[in-house]
Length: 246
Image 1 (spheres, rainbow, N blue to C red):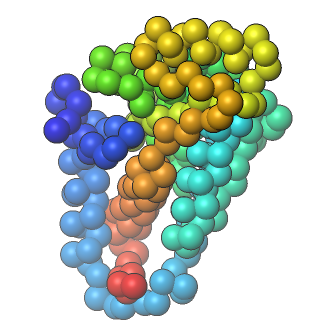
Image 2 (image 1 turned 135 degrees about the vertical axis):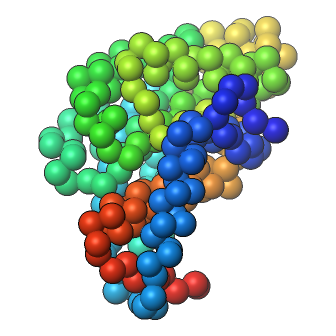
C-alpha cells in the first residue's frame, strides 16, 4: 500500500515514508553500481564515519524526543550526528560540514512553525543540494485514513510553500500531553480531540508514536546517504570497501 502518485512509498504503523520515483531509481542505481566495484572486505569500524545534521522545532517537547531518537539510532549505526533546535541555534555552512540533513517539526492548526518555514526557505539551495529528509509530527497521523490524508496534505503544502524537494518524507504520529499543558491548552485540546472522537482523559498523557517506525525512517535515510556517498566515490574512481555484515 502506497501513497497516491508516481513515487514509491513504504507503509509502517504510524509512519509514512516516501521517496520520489527519481530518488528511488537513483538510490537503486547507486547501490548496484557501487557494489559492482566492491572487492575488499573491510570491518565497519575502519570505514569513514558519515556526519549528519538533525534539525527540529518543538512546542511541547515531543518532536524533540523524536528527533533525538532518530539521532540516537543513526549514531548507533556508526554515524556522527549533530542535533540542532533552531529555536536556539542556526547551523552555519551545513554543506561543508554534513553529508545529509533531517529536518522536522510539529503541526499546529494545520501549519508548521513559521520559524521552520523561514529556516527551510532561507537555506533552500543547501537542502536541495544535500541528501535530505523531512518528517512532520502530528496527532492527525495517528488518526483514521481521512486524518492521515490531512497530515500528508499539510506536509505537501509545506514543501510546496518552501520549494524544498527532500529525498524522503514522513508523517509521524505525535502525542497528546495533557499533563504537560497549561489549563487553557489542556481544555482546548480536550475539546478538539473530543470532536474527533479521541482520548479525553486529561489525567494522563497519550503517546501515539510508533518508535519502530521512527527507527525505520532513520535507518532508511542513512542508507540513502551511504548509497549516494558510495556512488559519488565510485564515479570518481575510488575503490569502495565492502561493509561486513553484522
